[in-house]
Length: 387
Image 1 (tube, helix red, strand yellow):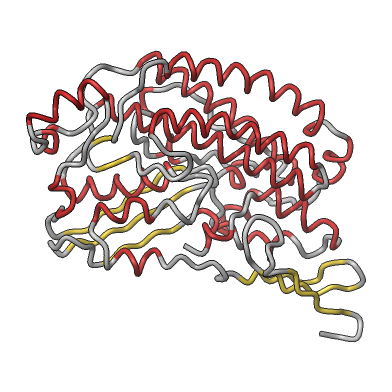
Image 2 (tube, helix red, strand yellow):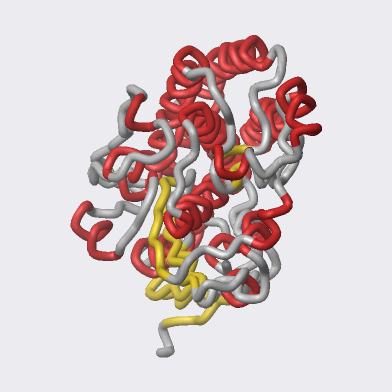
C-alpha cells in the first residue's frame, strides 16, 4: 500500500448473496486491486462424502448451490451410474431434464433478483423472487419438496408426473412469458440498468477461456460452450434448443444471457411434456428389488419407495467422471470406489468456485460503485464456491 492508496474490506457480513470478503485496494475511488476471500460458509462436502453411503451423498451435493439443486444432484448420480454400469430408462431421462430446466429458470430469476437489489431496484428484486416461486411450486408438485429435492436417484427418479402437471406447467410458462415483457420495460431496458451494466466489467473471450470461466458468464463473452450440447446427457440430445451466446462480454450481456436462457428452458420444458415416452421411471434392476405388494401402490401414485438395496450400494472398484450444465455453469464430479458402501474419494468442482476469479480480473480499473453491478452480473453464490 502506497501513500496514494487505501485498503477497504467489504464483508464477510453478507455483501450480496452469501458470506464472503473482498480485500479492495483503492486509489481514490478507482479499484487498483481486488482479492476475493472465500471460505466463510465452507460445506466440506468432499470430506463428509467419504463418511456417507452413496445414496446419502445425493442430498449433500445439493446444499452448496441452493437455488440450483437438481443439476448438482443429477451430475453426481450420473457419475454413480457409470460406476454401477446402469442407465435410467427413457421416461426417467425426460423427467430429469424437466426438473433440471425448471430449476434453471428458478435459479436465473434468483440471480436477476439479486442483481436488481444490488443496483437499487427493490421492485426487480421483489418481482424476481416472487416469480421464482412459480417454478418452485411446479417443482414441489413434481418432487414433493420446495428447494432441495433429491429427485434424481440411481437408475431413475423418485416420482412420475402427477395428475394435472402438464396443464399447471403450461399455465406457469405462459405467465412467465408475459412477465418477461414487464421486466423489459421496468428493468432490462431501464436507462439506469443499461448505464450501470453496459461496458462495465468486460470479460474478453480469450480471457474467459484462459481463466476457465463457465456457464452464462463464459457464453456472454462469445464462447459457444454448453455441456448439454458438448456431452449430451439425460434427454438433451433428443431436444431442440439454442445455446445462448453473447459477444459483448460486459455485465449487461451476462444479465441478458440468463434472460434468454430462461426462454430456452421454457422451450425445452414444452418439448419434454410433448415428447415424453411412456415406461418405467426406475431401472429394472432396482425396480425388481421393491416388494411386489408395494409395486401396485407405486404404479397408482407414481411415487417411488427407495429399494432397501440403495442403503448398501456397493459399486465395483473403479472411478467415474461426470459433468452437467448447471444454472451457474458446469458441475464436475469425480468418484473413486474401493468396493465398499462409501466412496474412497469424492471430488466436486462447482461453477461458482471457477467463476470466483472474475472478481480479481474484472474489478481493477473500475470505480468502487461498480462492484455491486459486476458482482450481481456474475451470479456468484459464495456457498457454491465453498463446497
